Length: 220
Length: 220
Image 1 (cartoon, each protein chain N blue to C red):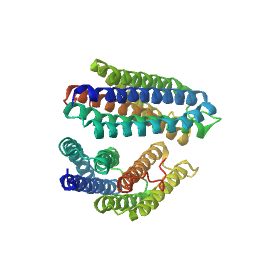
Image 2 (cartoon, rainbow over the protein chains, first blue to last red):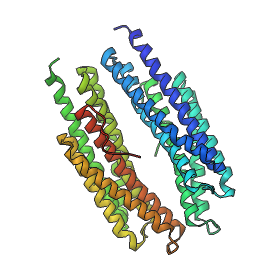
Image 3 (cartoon, rainbow over the protein chains, first blue to last red):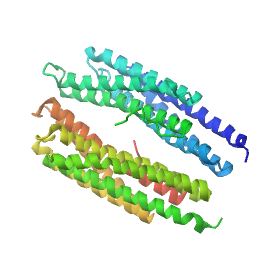
Image 4 (cartoon, one colour):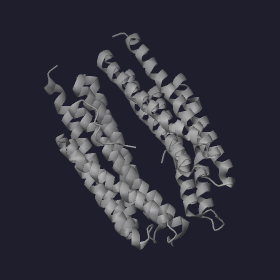
């Protein structure tokens, strides 16, 4: 079988994965905005849109199944298809995490889930999530792995915010009570997990591109 | 190609998945015990053993890759192999969640992460996790989907405990402060996610066995 037989469907799979990064990026962006502004309609729109991400995941799985069935890709091409299945699963999970943020915003509406003085931190985590997912999309689209170091650096910044938030809610000066502390902790964890999944996606892409496990990014 | 060519490696993949359910079941069991007894050595042993689960996941992925490459399974058999990849990923994540429980036990050592009066609830969640993963192993081993309803019922019981724990830590009578409230919330979430992943594994098995998406279990 000539390689060209496989490359066109593989390109379609990559296009769909890039489209998924846009959807889960937009979902997290809008969820962050809904959280910061206590915007119920925006939160609802994120929650409703998650079904579209789930459908796209199923479409990608079916396409991978068809490619394996009908094209019988070998070696590197088969690794790409199998890698795409794992990447789609991670991106689906990132969509779920954006939905969790939106549900948290909805739960406390018309109040905000986060105290005024932490708005800046969550806005930054949202901005980092946006940068991470947009670069993840670029890595998938171009297979240019030079962005991976940027993504790892953004992920470390998210982790730092996550640890800082723990320190803040546990400090004696925390004046917002148990509920707000739990809200902040869970929300912070959703961003941290979202970033981790993006890192695992880029690790998969690197593995597929280089044929070697990527050891430069440590996931815990 | 005769079906028998594919069935032997498929059986090996299923055996390895069953072995993974035993490992992640044992991990969560021991993590629960470490949590209840503030047992540092036991917590460390769970954390150390997670690498074995990760290795087994990679082994299963490689075996699936080889089966697709060399046996070129079609239709239902190919769906089994692709399903096995997703199942291995979910089981790996269940191992991570057991490790999170163990890390939480280690973090607060020599204290316990959970107040005395919640020990019973966490012991029950641990027992439910054990029942769920052991039945998940049986579903994979036998492809007998009659256990799926049991698993869904156990999962609902875990969800009830998870909601109850929220109510308890947010009640005005909560006397253990913010840190314990956050510990309880995160721990409870680990058990809830663990059970959810087990349900998603059984859904995959049902899909593979029946060729139809299983709609009897709703995951949110």
